[in-house]
Amino acid sequence: MGRLDALKGFGVTFRTLLTKPVTIGYPEHKTPVYPRFRGRHRLWLHDDGLEKCVGCSLCAAACPADCIRVVAEENTPEHRVSAGERYARIYEINMARCIFCGYCEIACPFDAITLEHSYELSEYTREALIYTKDVLLEPAPKQPPLHSNVPGGPIPPGEA
Amino acid sequence: MALIPPPGAPIRRSPRTDDAIDWDLRDPEALEASRGILTTTVEKAIAWAQTSAIWPATFGLACCSIEMMHTLSPRLDMGRFGAEYFRGTPRQADLMIVAGRLTQKMAPVVRHIYDQMLEPKWVISMGACASTGGVFNNYAVLQGCDKVIPVDVYVPGCPPRPESLMEGIDILRKKIGANGQVPSSELIAARRAERAEWDAQHASDALKGGPAN
Image (cartoon, rainbow over all chains, first blue to last red):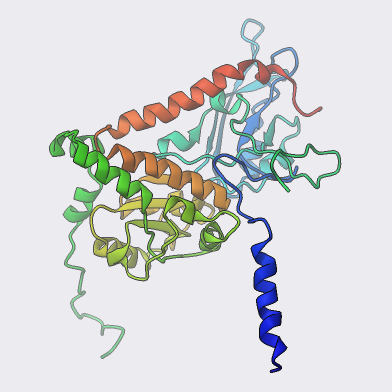
């Protein structure tokens, strides 16, 4: 232990005093995510308004947590919902059970379901966490910004 | 003392009966009706104080607790909401964060810790396993910690991001701030309306294609 060691140690302390805090003001500034971050699900529509989901239940079969429930029904000329033969009459995801692994996204042959970036999903009740088809067809609310060191990605304001 | 009782020995059960658990898990509407609604300045001040100093119990069950620790780290700093003070004893804690899968064997312990906490107390069920059992749909894991303790806020995720937990604490603070003066059904309705409002603003986005087939 030399006499200068204490000064060296305090040098680190005083240098750190001058740096900016690393804290993210969370509720005001969302933490940026990477493009492949998996958050809340979303079901997609074709450009003509038909649903991409054809009710094949492959997502439900792939789901390791068994949180997806699909009940399919035949399309009729009068009542055409999806582009295929059948459509999902009931499409429910129990978000409280979902582990956000993205297997449903991989299993889907029509890219009807994707995982968005939204991660603020807390609820007061378990019932509110069962997302039905009309909820899932809407765009995910409160999407956080993309991380700034993604090539070509937007640079979030106020983020280093 | 033998740890495993000999065969035929009477099984010693907890003095806590199912009635006590039922009392905790009773209908929140009925609870609020039985309490009576009093809106006084003192109660509002107490609610404000309680929202600003939620001390969680030091308590982690599985991987979710790693994210819970991250919430305390300087990057997110839960202390900005007065919730940084993790207490080593449940008697000094206001909030229990059930972070991780709750096994059948651990359930009485969690119940015991919950009983030791003083009123008022709140519970956040953090992650898929604590909320519903998650992927562990088997004989060993309790399918949701709300089977033994009343839960105020459910935070989905596996594990939830620290931000998700902070949002859970944020909506819990809204609930504490209401302090029983706003019925929980109204809080739930407000949350639903918030979401519906956002959806209405962005309804046209739903028709914008998505990933190419």
